[in-house]
Image 1 (cartoon, rainbow, N blue to C red):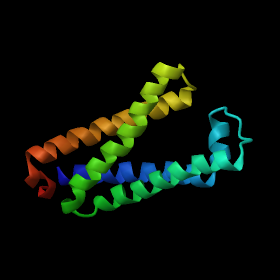
Image 2: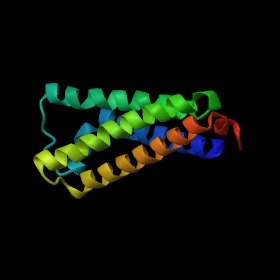
Image 3: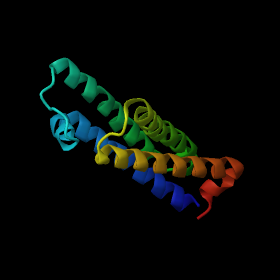
Image 4: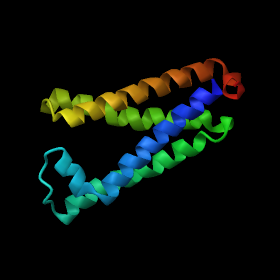
Length: 135
């Protein structure tokens, strides 16, 4: 199970790093990809980049947690918070604001999938802590 957890944490971490870096360094391209107007004020651009930086940093911590079994639980907890926060908020937005672009719906599905996988791994790890060290 440890290799599976390490693989999952590596995937979760690098997905967050990739998306976070895209938000930080290419917010206009990101918005254009969703069909949104990229001509935004500097204040709004800052509001976009800031959570991108947090996502990037969380991704680094998640990916780093894959390097040692002692850190698996921490990485899985952070993964559930990051992907749960994004995925559940997107679902709430769909209910409140209506259906967004297909790309955003796909992002929500991926986030919910990573949330569920992380949550299941965390549950199994909490039931059997020695599983983190088994190959």
